[in-house]
Length: 234
Image (cartoon, rainbow, N blue to C red; front, side, top):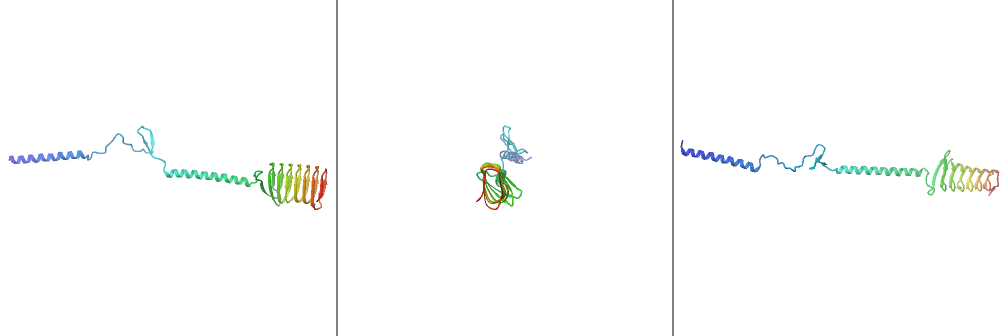
């Protein structure tokens, strides 16, 4: 073999080997295909339930309630409060309209034929409108009763009550120290003591107690006086 040619061939092989070694070194320095690095403090990925384990092993929530959920809860609470306030307000109005107002505020009642209204609270102030009938029964003391319209039977069992108004088919006083001033009354019946009644017109007057005073303005009533009472036209 030619020595010169052999030398050139050997130089070419060495050069090629040097290039290959340089290429391998470059790949190692740049980290090509080295794969992802793993560190000790890497955070594990969330589990299927949305809970991420902490470094201490205690599960912690991976998220907080969204604004939409908070808004929905607030709206529900507001709607519930409004409904409760509305129900309470409605119930209170219904009770007042039923004629159960306190004595200081007074009560206003409307009656029709066949209906009856009983007054059982002492000192109550009551206005009753009779639309073609209705009975009123006072079972308390010191009541102030105002009547309008055409009532049927007005019965007074308590003491020191005051009755004023328009017409009634009958006025029956069984208590003591009551006063009544009405317009037209079919029949006036008094069985207590020290009562006074004044009517514009009466069909009949029947008194059985003592120290009662009954006055009528017109009419020709049938009168029955069985005690020490005053019955006069005036």
